[in-house]
Length: 374
Ligand SMILES: Cc1cc2nc3c(=O)[nH]c(=O)nc-3n(C[C@H](O)[C@H](O)[C@H](O)COP(=O)(O)OP(=O)(O)OC[C@H]3O[C@@H](n4cnc5c(N)ncnc54)[C@H](O)[C@@H]3O)c2cc1C
Image 1 (cartoon, rainbow, N blue to C red):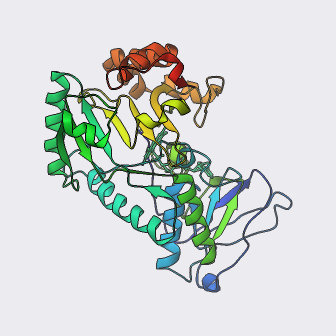
Image 2 (image 1 turned 180 degrees about the vertical axis):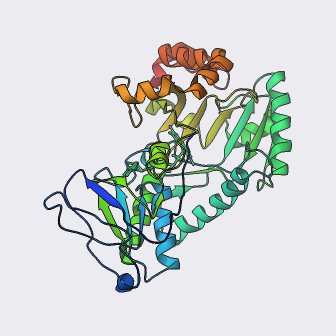
């Protein structure tokens, strides 16, 4: 899926940036600067000769980059730390365009780093949001089985969640489902009361503000071209950044776009928290889910579509280089070969709204096509 590369390079050297836009740095140079060699070299657009020097540069103004930078600044207050982001605002990509769900760690492989980080991250995120009054809701999640096969998968998922020490997880029968989600139909459900929602874009911007308040620099509109001492948190560009820093590009990032519908205002009351289909354990897609967001809208989706461009948000967005990189990548060819049926199904969900509707009607039999808005 998405890979974030964190790499520290030798603590000396030079980082060069190509300023793709205006030079709108929060200019500040730390007092510790003289203790170190010139780690970063930033030529501005207006004058390439103009230079800015930093001790550490974090590449990428998404949630991973901003939290890394804030942590660095807190740990090493005298370091002159900068974040460089190629877009003109923070959280321009995944961090500002995701489902907003605070996951509780149910599905991850027991004992894996992912499962540990998810549970710890959830607790820390709630604490952070509470401490700084960032709007969020702990509105719970039901994973609902609607047939005997899904019941078997659900039981396995429950065992998985227990091994992962997921907090307060419970198995519910069909009557208990109604107490949580009165309109939802199902045979059995796994209930995670601690799953929640938040606007991750808002969290990223808040981290950015905290970082600035501590004297950190945020360079917007900057595109890294070469570096020797840097932390890369480039989201969908993590593989390219790895290559630029002399590392292997593998595994390559394949962009998948999540497409969502909304329930109409008249049907929003059907969902209180999040309702998920039981994932088929042998498939790489999570299946359909409905999530009530902070603004009251209910998102339905996602349909996972191969994007024709990294950071492309519409069917019409494409980039020849990204397409070439994707289709010549043996990892993608193997993935499509292995999961051809599932990939075709995702494509059908995207091409034909009735495929999505049929799935939804398993939970809400009265739903009609007119209740879904693109
Ligand atoms: C459709 C979808 C739904 C999701 N739903 C959820 C969810 O509900 N809950 C959840 O927890 N997670 C969800 N995720 C995952 C989550 O959004 C990501 O894991 C997270 O946002 C990754 O953050 P990031 O900072 O690594 O990447 P990003 O937010 O993509 O940030 C990377 C930044 O690096 C910048 N960058 C890249 N290259 C350069 C360069 N050369 N120079 C300067 N800047 C550069 C980019 O412009 C970008 O701003 C979802 C993801 C997707 C795609």
